[in-house]
Image (tube, rainbow, N blue to C red; front, side, top):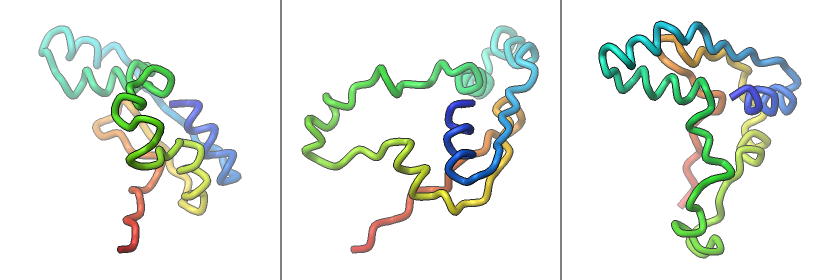
Length: 106
């Protein structure tokens, strides 16, 4: 997550702070309450959900024959005019660094 914040900040000419927060309460919710949302937030905050190098892109879209994959860097460059944001991964709601993808014109 810090790498993405650095990439977005560099492209926008600003600094984005990533606050992972205290993970102990989240770990307790996972262990004691089997809280799936807490588990997802923990996985995002610790980088366990980063599949950028270990994925099945070729199985899903062989040789990009169905569509062109969009890289994070490409999306950041496309959206660099978006206002900088501050995110909190282990807060009540995580926020996205990037705006939603624009719909293509028909």
